[in-house]
Length: 223
Ligand SMILES: NC(=O)c1ccc[n+]([C@@H]2O[C@H](COP(=O)([O-])OP(=O)(O)OC[C@H]3O[C@@H](n4cnc5c(N)ncnc54)[C@H](OP(=O)(O)O)[C@@H]3O)[C@@H](O)[C@H]2O)c1
Image 1 (cartoon, rainbow, N blue to C red):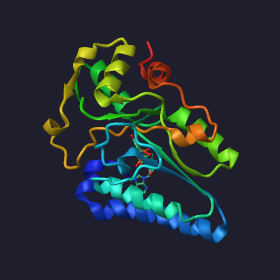
Image 2: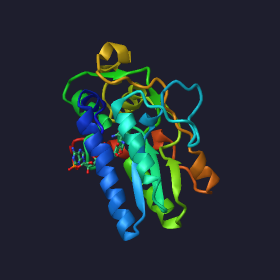
Image 3: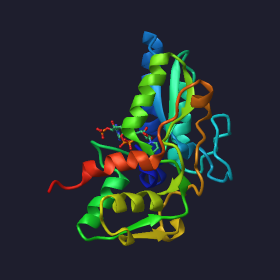
Image 4: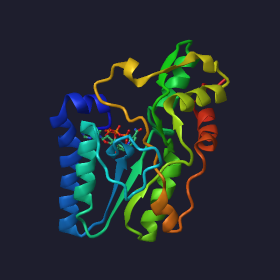
């Protein structure tokens, strides 16, 4: 359950799904001797840093979603064999995401309001899936930050996507998070350094603009 605002207004449900759900998986894995690969989030950080967060930085989430995901990480880490992959702003085929939503809305003549003041990583799901398979296949357990290289705001990401789609990028309007009146706090800065992947000798996923250029043609309406 990854909607920050629903989590903020319904903490019991957020912890039920995101923490207790994970805890049940961990208990089953402990009984059977299985390893667990868990997907977590940059939302475990406080967003106040002025440099990219590493895996050894302290997590101090200001939101219910972040706190539930951090508790989930902690329970996963009690297993003898585990992987925790922290990802950020997912986009890719097969599921609704902010890139596809923005391209569709602008393609239908609408406008999109996107925050300019939240800087993070973007993660193309096929790239993340390939890297997760590689890391898990290597048997090198641990906590990993995982995203495409480079950072961006949601505004930059969707604007670039709309431009790649050949549509009017002026239809993406930048906004300050505070103007958007959302219940959950948004992190000003959530960029993650992929230090653990580098130190373990893995190559990093390609820069996000390259991944976006692969993805956008897949979501354009067929002529
Ligand atoms: N989306 C992002 O930008 C983003 C950013 C950072 C981290 N993450 C993390 O990446 C992972 C995947 O993200 P996502 O956006 O694909 O998450 P999602 O839409 O919440 O779905 C992830 C999975 O959880 C299941 N699920 C969601 N709500 C549930 C509920 N109330 N009860 C039972 N199962 C439920 C979904 O089942 P169904 O398929 O049946 O709905 C799906 O299999 C999550 O762990 C999320 O915390 C996501």
